[in-house]
Length: 200
Length: 125
Image 1: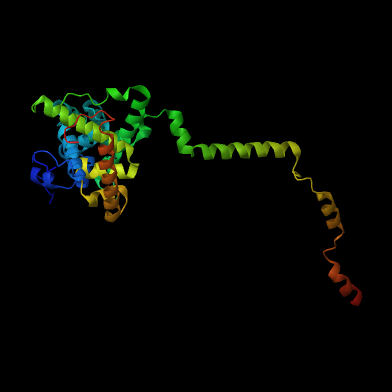
Image 2: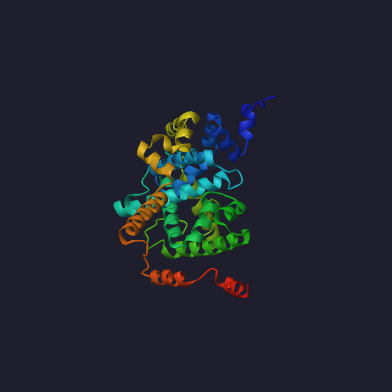
């Protein structure tokens, strides 16, 4: 007897099972993957690139790569979300390198934000976010990655340990050191970097 | 000085301020818009076309590339070329390619009498 898979089963199926279903011909499985993974992927790319257009390009390319790998996907090799995280991270690094060669970094991060909050509140948030991105760039790569994953991408430390190939203790240690440096950096540099933040 | 405004992080608490920075950055991330989502959904390949292209890249290769790969690729070609060159060289220089005095071995072999052991039996009858 052939097993029927209804919509509800698809919605609760794990990512890797959906990818295998897509490779076997289910377009619906792929659609669910897009809806499920996109918010996190887009957010990750946006935090790295600070630009909606660039984040969209990267997220779109990441899914194209996922569809390509689908026929060869091995369910025991890695989590789909971890694989996507790495792809997005690499695409962002490529884009930042290219941006560094071709554009003025001062022009980045000027996308319009959600118009609903007051203009002053938006300016405040934008100032803080830009200051934070600058400060993260000053950290060693591993510390910055552990901090971004936890506090911007909101991943669990278990997941971060899996992504970074570390123990949870090592991840927590990186985060603690990174947070201390970030706090000190933001405290020391807010005036010289020109941040007009009332809280500092 | 005591921190009075509960809506703002305590300026004396760097950890609380840092959390405010993270929150600001998270709040600024826009939602992926509907057009963009639709574009990505439209790009999902149909299994018959998209996946076949990935699975079988040989389909779109020219005939000479297919023959080349079926023969075994570069290892086969270099092996054949080497064998051909050695063959021509042996043909032109003769079989004694290492310059060994093979003639002497030949001459010595002529003096070896394979029936030498039977001489005594002839003498003794």
